[in-house]
Length: 276
Image (cartoon, rainbow, N blue to C red; front, side):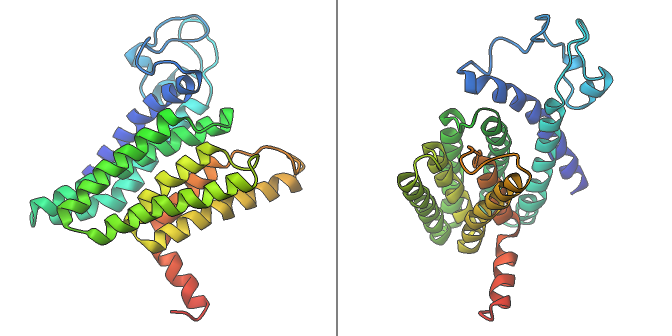
C-alpha cells in the first residue's frame, strides 16, 4: 500500500501540472495540447527541468528562469491539491481492487474501473473549481467528458459485478440531482446557471454509484458549505446580497464529503434523530 500511495501522489502531481494548462486555456477556448507551455512574459518554452510539479516553482523562487517574471502561487497549489486528491481517492478505492485482485479478475477489474473513474472526477473537480472561481463558469469541455467517462467506467464496473442496484442508483442520482438544480435554475435563473445543472447530474451519477446515503449527504453538503461561505462573506462585508458567488466549488466539495464520508455521516445523523 505505501508504494501505491506514493505512485498515486506522484501521478496526481503530474496531472496537476497539466490541469494548470487546462485551467488557463479551456475558458479561453484554446487547445490544451498546442502550443507547448511557455512563459507569458518572455515567450520562452518551459523546459522539462522547470516543469517538475511544486519542486520547480520552489527552486526557481516563483519566477521565470529567463525573464524573472513572477510565477503565480496557484500553480504549485493546483499541483499539490491534485496530488493529495489522487492519494485520498486511491486510499479509498485502491484497497477493494487489491483485495479482489487474487480472488476474482472480474471483480478486480470492476473495482479498478471504479477507482479510475473517481480519479478522473478528482482531476475534473480541481479544474472546475479553479475555473469557476476565475471566470464563474463550468465549461462543457470539462463537465461533459467527465460525465461520459463516469457513465462508461462505472457502467462497465456495475456490469462486471452484476450490480443492478448500483447502476440504478447512479442513474437515479444523475437524474434527481439534475432535476433539483434545474428547478432552482428555473425559479431563480440568476442564482444558478445551466453549468451547475450539468455538473449536478455528473456528481449525482458518481454519488449514486456509491449508494443513497452518499448521494443525499453529498448533495446536501454542497448547499450547506455554499451557504456557510456565503454568510461568512456577508458578515465580513466581502459580498452583498446581490453578489454573484460561484457555487461550483461548493457543489464539488460537498460531493467529496459524500464520497468519503457519506455513509457514516448519514448513520450518525439518523442515530441523533433516533431513527437508527
